[in-house]
Structure formats: C-alpha cells, structure tokens
Image (cartoon, rainbow, N blue to C red; front, side, top):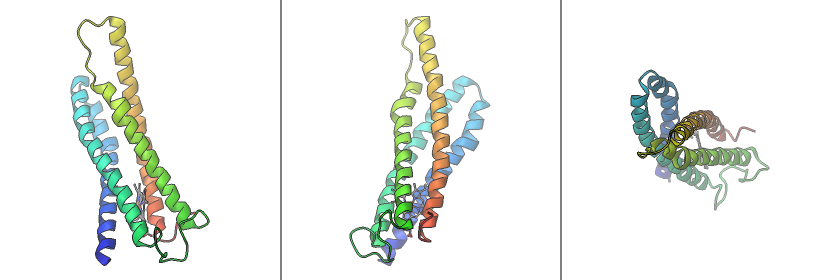
Length: 177
Ligand code: HEM
C-alpha cells in the first residue's frame, strides 16, 4: 500500500513536470529560437520538435489521468471509505477542486487533440505540382492561420497547466475553494 501511494505520486508528479516543463521549453526556448532562423529551416525545426513534443504531451496526459484516479482510489475517495471525512462531492472543497482539476485536464486533452488532428496536419501538408497561384496563396494563408492557432493553444495550455498545479497542490490541504 505504501509502495502504491509512492509510485502513483511519483508517476503523477513526473508526468506533470514533463507536461509543464515541455510547454515552458516550447514557449520560452524553442519559440524564440525558431523566430530567429530562416523560415524554411524554422518549418523543419517546428515539424520535428512538435512531433516529439506531442508524443510527450499525450503520454503525460494519459499518465496524469490514470495516476490521478488511482490516487483518489488509494485515498478512499472512489470505491471505499474516505480516509478524510469529506466524500468526493461538490459540497466539499476537496470534491470541487478535484472536479475543477478534471475539467482543466479535459480542456488540455481537447486542445491537444485540436493541435494534433486539426492544425498540425495543415502545416505538414505539401503542395502538389500544378496548383494555381490562388490555391497556393490559400494554402499558405491556411498554414499561417494554423501556426497562429497552435501558438495560442500552446500558450493557453501552459496557463491552464499552471492553474492545475495550483489546484493539485491545494488538494493535499483539502482543496482550494
Ligand atoms: C484527471 C485529472 C486529475 C486527477 C483526478 C488528479 C488527482 C490528484 C490527486 C488525487 C492528488 C493527490 C491529492 C491528495 O494527496 O489528497 C493530486 C495531486 C497533484 N496533482 Fe493531480 N490530478 C489530475 C490532474 C492534474 C493535472 C492536469 C495537474 C497539473 C498539470 C496536476 C497536478 C497535481 C499536483 C501538482 C499535485 C500535488 C503534488 C502531488 O501530491 O503529487 N494534476 N492530483
């Protein structure tokens, strides 16, 4: 039991650190570096880094969820007697905070899905030969719009993840609000 508590906390914290650290690195290190190099190289760099970063994002989000639910179970909030007196309902700060944490996690998943399945494919699609100038311009505009969306979604994710860290840390003391 002690091992399960330690192991679930260890993996939860490691996954949170990977997610937040990755988002900070993308925003403050890779982003500025990318803007400082020629566009063609920036595109290749963006493709390669996003590919690896998104893999880490998805592994982290899955592990955060599984270990988060596991910890609630170990604490007795799901399927057993709570170690504390407050059950996992919206009447108590612990339940409200855990619910808020779940909502933030859900938004991170939705944003991750938008980046992975909607906006990133627009960046990697290659123009075929023989397209008209209007089509080429349209494709470039769509790419630029996708870059903007990815930048904003990544920024929003970083802010939300920091909020989630605050909510998670407050759970240990019974919840934030
Ligand atoms: C489905 C979503 C999640 C669930 C069910 C969940 C559940 C939990 C639980 C049960 C705890 C331990 C609280 C206690 O000891 O009483 C915890 C702690 C924590 N969580 Fe999560 N969590 C989730 C998502 C997140 C996310 C998205 C982040 C940040 C990006 C996060 C960051 C933290 C932090 C920083 C702690 C405190 C440090 C620790 O004890 O590990 N959690 N979480």
